[in-house]
Image 1 (cartoon, helix red, strand yellow):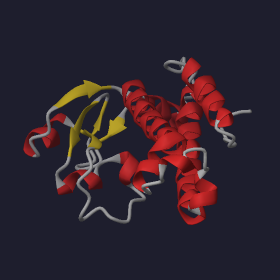
Image 2 (cartoon, one colour):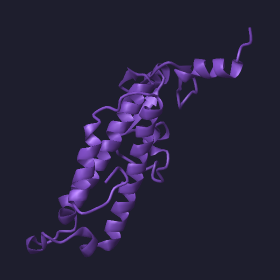
Image 3 (cartoon, helix red, strand yellow):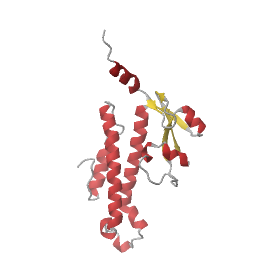
Image 4 (cartoon, helix red, strand yellow):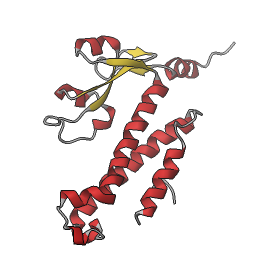
Length: 181
């Protein structure tokens, strides 16, 4: 009998996740939120952040149970699917905030007078519009990464109707999106 060791090892590790702090392989990690400075180092969505040292935002962190205890992280156990579901939901929240900003919040930020309520962000502040568009594009690419993970693993995407609702809202505001037409 011939054993395919590469496939065997891959199968063994397929259901394992690695703690980003200590590197231990385990079938599940724990997930929690923290504003502590150390959290940015272990938060998957903060990997490309350039302001980790002075960031005070709440970060979703995945660690093994021992590391979570050492760092006093209040957390609950999650497997790979649970991790990806949490990441997908966090990304969706950020995309919804982008939509809210494009729809109305920018007018509050820029103190737009009521008589200019019909103005569009790109006309009033093109530089801010470009920043928002770039941020939303990055989030949409991140969302698609999570979406592909679910497809690649033949797992149903949580709340699949969310994507079509998001697309309709973006298009309704007169903008384009990488998530559909």
